[in-house]
Length: 321
Ligand SMILES: C[S@@+](CC[C@H](N)C(=O)[O-])C[C@H]1O[C@@H](n2cnc3c(N)ncnc32)[C@H](O)[C@@H]1O
Image (cartoon, rainbow, N blue to C red):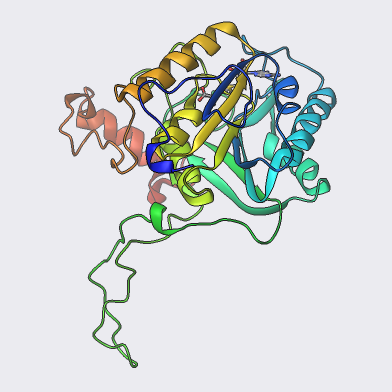
């Protein structure tokens, strides 16, 4: 298949897996769907599963039962994964009466016992979310990246980011005077600062837990080649398939809730038509002060601010607050 002409506005969204399809959105349970995928057919599996928090699309389960269900799905994902393929499981915390249980910690043994090898535990940092009163507000989640073997696809060049000091040169040795940086940019590292999809994000839909397209794009570009299959067992609003199409990869996913299946199909259609609005991968993080946003000026006088912030100054250590 020539990936150059993989998609057009008329590309069909197949309802079931077929070797000749290039986009599949299955409306139903992911386990049923995965069982229809042939062994080793998929290059990349990216997903954000339910966190067992009792959201509208999930029933809160005993944690052990939740993990057993995840294990069943992950085992099937491993079966359909190509020998050079990757699985990226994006998770946050399960919360039990105020105590947090990081899902990556409890899911790790499942992947490891299935013989997968972890390559990165990527920290996805974002700035918006719930304001906690009895613990520090959660401002990151993780992406567990596993490969099936030691011979895996990893393309760094398409995801390099600008250097901090691109003009830096070697100052001694045989390369003295030459630029020391890679002109294509630097490795983005394992801490990714990417805005989450909250109310004023351009990608926000009625779904409560979308991840942003740019997060998945980075994984698609680095862990697959054009024409490969990218799969999301918990597709939600179709984000993973959108990121795949955008980079000439075939995309498929399963979603159990009919209203999200409809939403995913509509967003994929918009992507095919070139009308879906997303936050671009290379856009810097919004800085309200630099942007001159009037709300970044405190309405409280300087004195008020001073009394708040002096609490954190070293010279008041030991004084009653
Ligand atoms: C955290 S959300 C994923 C959102 C997605 N990443 C996006 O950007 O829209 C999890 C999704 O999995 C769906 N889901 C839950 N259990 C499922 C199952 N067994 N099979 C298929 N989908 C399921 C939920 O309805 C929900 O939309």
